Image (cartoon, rainbow, N blue to C red):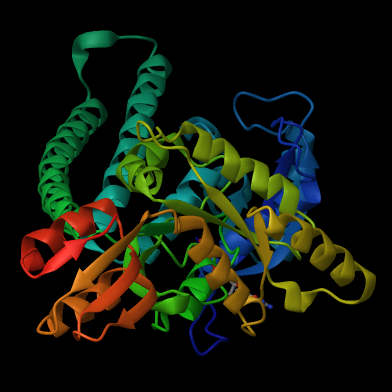
Length: 440
Ligand SMILES: Nc1nc2c(ncn2[C@@H]2O[C@H](COP(=O)(O)OP(=O)(O)OP(=O)(O)O)[C@@H](O)[C@H]2O)c(=O)[nH]1
C-alpha cells in the first residue's frame, strides 16, 4: 500500500469503486447498483475518487476482468491515487490477490465490504457475535481455497507440508476453535433473549416489526414512532440489531415496535444464516411494517428484494401475515410525482396496505399510527362490570387494553367496554376476578 497523505482532519482512504456488470440477473440497473456500492464504500469512510461500471462478458478466472481491462483500470487507480479498490461482486481469493498485485492497492469484494460495515454497525452483543461468525466463515473459505491454490502451484507435491502449508493449517485450526467458541457464546445470548421474548409474550401487547431495504429510513421512523434516540445517520446499515420499544397508539393502546436489520440485495449467505434468529422474530410479529424509500428510483426493485426475504421467513402457524407498506421520504417528492404517489397511497391506505409518510418531517405519521392501530386491533370486545372499589382494575384496563365505552350506574358500579387480547383478559380475571363480572 502506498503511503497515506494526511489531508483531512481524519485521513480517509482513497478508493475507486468498480461495478462489474452482466454477472447478476438482478432487475436493477447497473447505475443503481454502482450507486449503492459507492454508498456502501462511503459508509466505510472511504474517500471515493472514481467509480466505474465495467461490462464483463466473459469471466477471466485469474482476474475476473480481461487483461486489457485490468491494465486500463490500473491507470484509473493510479490517476485517482487510490489505496483501495472496491469490486462490487464476489471475487475468488486468487482474483483478489492478482488484482491487488496488478493495481498495487488493497482490493475488497462485495462480501468483504458488507461484512466490514455490518461489523462496525453492530450495536448489541448478539449482533457483534453474528458478524464475527460470518466473517470467520468467510475467511475460512478463503483459506481453504488459498491453500488448494498453493498446493497446485507447487505441482501437487502433496504431503511434504512446507512452512506455508503448516501456517495455513494452523490458521485454519485457530479459526475453527474460535468458531466453536463464538457459537457457544451466541447460543447463550440467544437463550437469554429467548427468555426475554417469553416474558414479553406474557405481556400481551401486539408487536410490530419494522423491516426495509437498507437506508429506507427504518431507524428514523422508529425514532418518530417511539420518540427515542436510536443511532440514525446518513449511512447504510445504521441498524443491525433488533431494538425494541413500546409505543402508544391512538386511544392509548400500547404496542411493541421492533427495529430490525436493513436488507440489501445479494446479502452474503454467511450473513443470511447468522440473521436467521432476527428474521424469525420478524415472522412472529403481529404486523410487519415494510418501510420503503418511495423517492428512490430503485424503490420497486428494493421492494422486490425485501419481499423475497420476507417470503423465506417461516410463518407462525394459524396466523396470516399482515404487511403494511410505509412509503417513506415523501418530502423529497414534488409536483406531479408527489401527487401521483400520494393518490396511490391513499387508495391503498383504505385497504390497509400502504401509508405515505415522511419520517423526517413527521407528515403522515399520525395516519400511520391510526392505520397500525386499526390493523392490529382485532382483539374481541368484552363488557365488564366493576364494583366501586375496583379503581385499580379500571386503571389496569386502560393500561393494557382499549377502553371504548364507560358508564357508572346508580349503585356506583362501572360498566366498561374494552378491547382486550384474550391472554390479557385471562390475566385480568386472575388478578381482579372477584368483584368484576363479565357480560360477554
Ligand atoms: N428526506 C428524508 N430523509 C429521510 C427520511 N427518513 C429517513 N431519511 C434519511 O435516510 C437516511 C437513512 O435513514 P435510516 O433511518 O438510518 O435508515 P435505515 O432504514 O434504518 O437504514 P439501515 O440501518 O441501513 O437499514 C438518513 O440519512 C435519514 O436521515 C425522510 O422521510 N425524508
